[in-house]
Amino acid sequence: MESAKVAVIGVGNWGKNLVRNFANLGALSMVCDLDSNRLATVEKDFPSVRVTNSLDAVLKDTEVKAVVVATPSDSHFPVAKQALLAGKHVYVEKPLARDVRHAEELDQLATERNLILMVGHLLLYHPAVNLLKDLIASGELGELRFIRSDRMNFNPNRRDHWSVLWDLAPHDISMMAYLLDCQDVEADRVGGWDADGHGVIDVAYLDLEFNTKGRVIPGQVRNSWIDPQKLVRLTVNGSLKTAVLNDHQADNKLALHSLTPAGRMVVEYPEYSDMEPLHLECEHFLKCVSTGQRPRTDANNAYAVLRVLSDVEERLSRRPAVKAAAAAAANS
Image 1: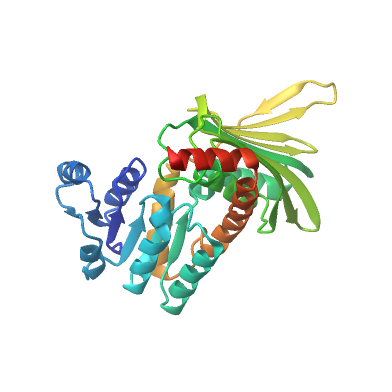
Image 2: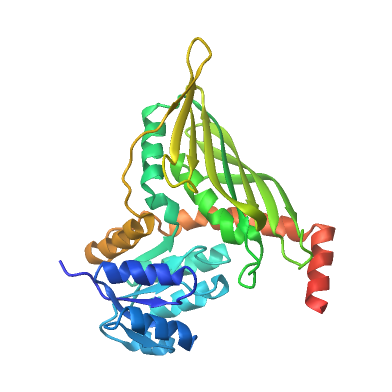
């Protein structure tokens, strides 16, 4: 079955990866961006792909059946809404929207028009994450006790984000909820700091409660934009084994740690597919468009993330230091 033709809107640092993957899948028809230099690069690398700086041109094109939104996150909702109203299937990079009500509106539009709406929660397509989910479900780790995700890097470009949490935490929260098969996630405690004095929170932590199967599993997320040593690590503590997924490593990303009766630490490295997660995610979107099945990362998957982040953002905005920093940045 031939893949539906796709247009990618936005060819920034992440959008170019989407362009590459949809091109490799034989589905890329059009690319849209306001930056002429980016479009020139696309024309050079993919001569058969049409380019434009007009969103209207994309939405009016009858060959384009689906739109991939990789624009700055503040524009996700309006661009996705226009695409759905134009009758296009839509894939939106995380976060789906900035407001839960906007996510609900997009979901309603897609449902009414029998269109696919998918959010780019990439880690739910990661082979190592899916293997870990299977191991948890099989009881390999025993009774779960704690889950933590650390995601840190150095990012001086913060124009598109309200805080580090809106940039990084969607990965963490969506992955943790998926692994625990839980959509009932609550933020217990939250801390955030404007360490660089730019009026934007660039270091933060969340203490979370995952209510699943009659139990509450505690969890924590730690995010930073000011750490020069990149860290992408998930730790899942169980009564039998502790799983550590270190996605920044080239090999042996997933390790299972356990103690022998004699107290010796044993480390296992289970095998999993080496397929690129983004390739699998793009492939899944095309399959959903072709078959009509609901995506693994649908609007329901996005709600849990948006509810937590909206609540946390509101709490952090009440902190005096944060408000003062934001006011100073606005007046500079």
